[in-house]
Each structure stands twice: as C-alpha cells, then as structure tokens.
Image (cartoon, rainbow, N blue to C red; front, side, top):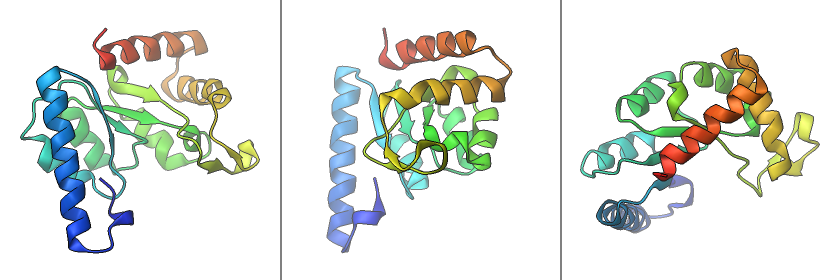
Length: 158
C-alpha cells in the first residue's frame, strides 16, 4: 500500500484489491506477510482487521508513536533499517516497540546518507543497525542479535 504511485482512483482500488488478495492467500496458507505501508498505515490497520494473519510485518516502519502502539496492539512485527542509526525519531520508536516484535532490514536499493556515504542498502549495514539497536535498548550486541534471531523465527513461524 503506497499512495506515492497512485495517479488516479482506479490505481488505489487496484492496490487495495491486490493487497487484500495477498492477505487472503497468506491467511489461507498460514504464511507471513511483509507489508509496505508508506503513507498508508491507517488504511492498512483498517483492512487488516478483516484478516487473521498471525505473522504480519510492517516493513520499514515509519509511523507515529500512536500508530506504533496500534501495531503492537494488533500483534504486528515492525522492522527498522539503517536510517535508525542517525534518525532520532526512529530511535524513539524503537525504544517504544515491544522487544518481541522488533526486526531489522536494509531495504536496498535505497541510498543512505551520512555514515553510509550514499551507498545503496546492503547486508553489510545490518551489524551497524544491530549495534545501534543494542545501545538504544541497553543490550549487548550478542543479546540483540539473539533477540532478532528469535523474533525472525517467530515472524516466519519456525
């Protein structure tokens, strides 16, 4: 769900239809879903109330504190990426996230400024994201990595 790419109302209708079709399949086959929800979190929350998806991830979470609380109340996982390293608002969101629902990611091919020299997202950024998250949550790097592994297994249902 992303209104950024909607040029006319029928595009939005198509996005909703595809989203709901994929949610139906995830529900039917008990599969996890990773949801792109840029500028559409409230719509996603509304639609998701009609589906029983036990493993839903709001990829690259970029909502408000209120939306984060709604995501936690609905049992969603949320992921944070390299921007968290230098964005205070993302660090605050991470600190308010249920630890059992945190995941991390890189989300290439987005380019990252500051400490990443405008490089596209790559797997090698993950240790920096984990290190930052560990400092925010008062954990060692290894404790944070273990938590993320456990959360990943939970999200994937393994």
